[in-house]
Image (cartoon, rainbow, N blue to C red; front, side, top):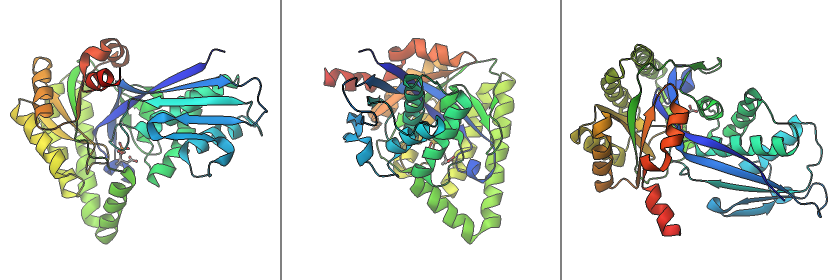
Length: 339
Ligand code: PMV
């Protein structure tokens, strides 16, 4: 029997992480070289309600009925059924794989949710619209983060560069001139909830000081939007460096991130910062297209467990999708090992 399948990309936050939780704007873009992939197969011989979930990447192989309410994948399935007013799901297997590293700031949780929602709702004959997909993924994000801003589920659902303010509809960015970002993974896994919780405690101790920092980060995100939309992406480097100063100040950088940032700058990047919750996970660097591979190589030599070179453009998604494997480093090695 053929499967109904759906994909969802990873993402990076270019500007504004953490401050976005406190109502300041942020900019995020999809990363199509990594993705979650979900296949749903009917089980014609089985009884209605027998839903089997398999996610080999996280060692999950279980029946939906046996999973607790706060298990994120079970929660996604139950939310979809509830939204479609189905008390029982037709018997099926849901198979989930992902090339997005977990707990590293690339949006793996939201991408898996989005792909499950799309594949399952299509399998049930009622593909949900983007708005609904994003809203359900947001509910599930709460299990991972507690108090997510909503940026991950939005950028991943809509798969295009977004300017995002919590509680407002996303705005698409005009991108008259594409630019190249090198992503470097420290290999240190860092759950978003920990970093977000620590920042909250600091903010509670001294709200005026941290509100001031968030204002600065929000101002940088606004300036970055102007540079992107005016076709002057070269200014983004300085803005990334400034954003990183504030992220360091609120305690979400780490020695591994700092070391990769330094290496990227020494290799000719125009600016660099952490991306996502921080403390580990990924850093990003703006590079001239002809320098990008050199920066990526330097990051790998300095210990990055993988690098991705991605072009952010107005037709970014298609472009990135087409360039695919040619632009991804590190994953290629992983694939070869697996053969
Ligand atoms: O999921 P991550 O690691 O990309 O972090 C999301 C960005 C934060 O601003 C730290 C949290 C949020 O909900 O926006």
